[in-house]
Length: 185
Image 1 (spheres, rainbow, N blue to C red):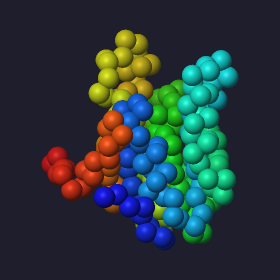
Image 2 (cartoon, rainbow, N blue to C red):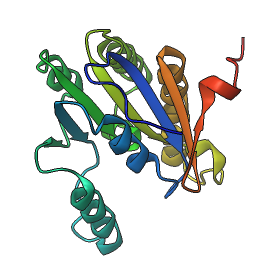
Image 3 (cartoon, rainbow, N blue to C red):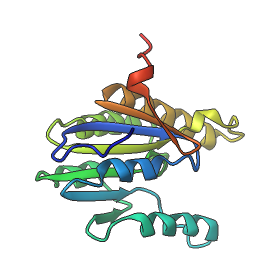
């Protein structure tokens, strides 16, 4: 049986899964008993996409009013470093973050990726990262789609390897990867 993480938990938790799998709901459940929650919503607004807006609205309705919401932070590491108290951080989701950095060349991306991993692996914080499993879908037909998938998948794997706890959400079912899986050498 899944229970929320203990108060004052410190460490990195990764949650992955396909679209509409329950990833965000699992993250919200796990972090619900923390005293102060900072919710970092990474996706850009899409005013011309009513379906996207409906999904955003569902997320908003589920979140408690006492949580602090930061939407689309321009420098996510700077935002995270500013929370050095008893806050717990939920980053939802990695796809929006990767999208912000698609215009960067490979060297700039690698620098960002390294800095981001260092930022979220601070043992003095509780951080949950929600990430889409983009590699399970179709092969992208465009170079930009391929770049997104490659960067996202690589960053998701790096986060998982640095996580204290790893979950996979599939069809509304939470799978504890630490109980049933082993890291690939």
